[in-house]
Image (cartoon, rainbow, N blue to C red; front, side, top):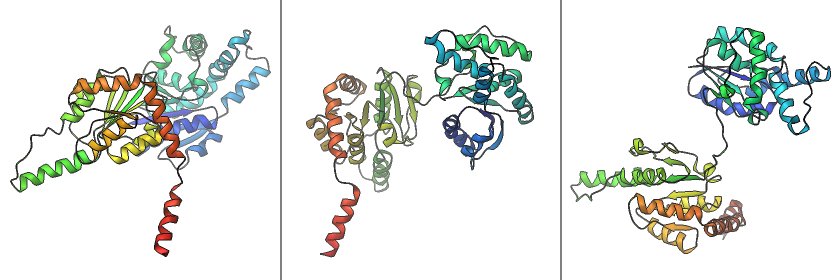
Length: 366
């Protein structure tokens, strides 16, 4: 895949696009980044060709504004919005379009990725007939597409492009963002021991001809997916390679092989877990209530202890319905959330890891 990425604005816009550029390069795709010369260093060292050809479009717009060549918004309540809309989609946009179009024609992109404030790339994508998607960036997040429409149509007319009557044409092919949805985030992971220890045990049992318990390795995660599909939330389920019937997953449930658990727990409202010690420790560290569905080892004890401490609930009964009801209760229970956050503060007040090193040094010295 050939991806044209166009970035203007401040260094923060380049940093917002950087993870996408890096991920595309790491995935083996051919990436061309067109940006301002002052932003090019942000993308240095990435697996992408970087062309620093733009002038600073915001500074250019401000200059035109001060020279009286752009209108100053009259209504103060709309001043910030209208000002940035004018700076992003004003007449100076044609200069960026003229710089970008020949590079795009030579590169022949399959898709155009633009920072949310960069509209020259949108018009180039329309010219070439390729899909375009905005990435998150400062001012692009709050500009009203309906108020942008006449400005962009002015630019389309000046460039000989067909006008649009659709205000959300700027998002015709969707938009990317990295902020949480307006629904609570629920994470679910049943641990590394499930695909490792359990399946290894079953293999050894077969090898030695031992009685094999009836066990469906897909059942626990299928139950999680079914339960969360009926819950009003945004959910991410980690499978760690275990078989899961994703056809039953609702649109708001994303099933992945793995996710950065500690990072996502910082934003989660609930953690559906097997009750492994590491997972519980990470949930307490993040102040997240737990719905614990234990399977073997210490997990049953841990689940009961989580319930005793008021940090969540033990899902004692199998099936999607008990799990669903447990999750609903926990999401609605402010007391459990408060207790999880109190436990988080206690954990954060503990001595740092250096204290353990010092203790071991004293033991060795004695």
